[in-house]
Image (cartoon, rainbow, N blue to C red; front, side, top):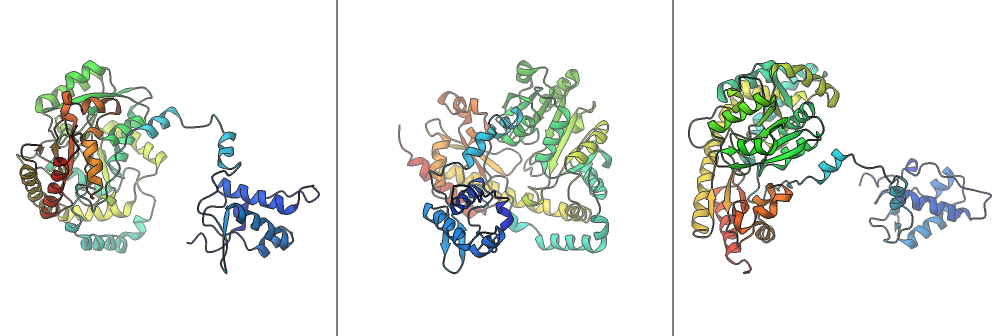
Length: 505
């Protein structure tokens, strides 16, 4: 390891040795070194200085250092390797006196803010490994033209390296913002000019940025129930009080939202493809939501999740395109269409928010890296994005049909599959007698990732969502984009066998 390659005397910091005291110097040195280990100044696997070097550095006899090292070795704080040196042990003695707990004791009462605690305690969904069916949100990376992307990155550096190396505009790379505005106007009927487009490091950053700008601590904010935990976390990070609003076949229930939090400051919605249920918000609900926002002087944040992959009916206009009062903020991302590590998204804000957003970006992070923005600009401007999107939409339509057929065959009479008109997953509804979390644990042991529908309800609602009386909250989200139809069919049949062999009672 690089850390073990050479000893670092500076890691030990200053050591006060009482050369006239009653305690022997080797005991004082032993205690100082032990404390450096416990404090984390000397980390597991790190090499201690050779005894001669340490003796010279601190004007001690070598025997004093060797005796201190031997004591540490005997107590398990360090290990010795013949010809290699002395290293901090990978695991420390269980009954180590003093140390980290002592440091924590010294700063009792100093901890997280209320907002920090809310974020730390907020439920989250672990990201799934790409190689396991049925990972969510992972595109088919084998179908992405990475060689072309590398060429575009290289071309941008060769022809604009000096410009790209300067401090970026906090709102993003101008040519990319213009391309995105043109794309959104043509494809999503979004009302925007390039000046209103803000480039962010993924949709999640965009949501968090808007929450910080628009919400004061303890403001109420509507969230969909069930919904994506990241959306809730963005609002909690601004100190908001969440108002869970149920989702049905027409999307978020605006009447229920008004009954639970009529004076909310903001509503965060996914109207084109609700996560996780996959429903599309009806026009009547969209108009009612806009009326509520205008009447209450509230904001609507539209997370246009997975809208690019629509398999039935004509493309739907964004909610933002229906907004005549400038109340809707539109958030999108390229990560699922292209590849997750790209971490590029965008926010379309009303004109009066442009300068506040610019100031916030300048204070928070200065803006998003320009180099991938420049490459993405060329990817869009040269027509590669539109071509790739068409190809992926066709590919995913085949996979979607395949997994629906497999589920219908393997789970006949036991569970049903629901597929929204868009997206990269289908919803497998399980009967109440087969709780999703229990089956998911067994599925994980055979290499399947089966995100539970019940996990996307707020913690206080999960038990109710998974009961016999409310079985709508019991099921799996089966991502299909990252795997070929044959692999999906095998995984579906393996899951069906587990469900059939589940423990009774």
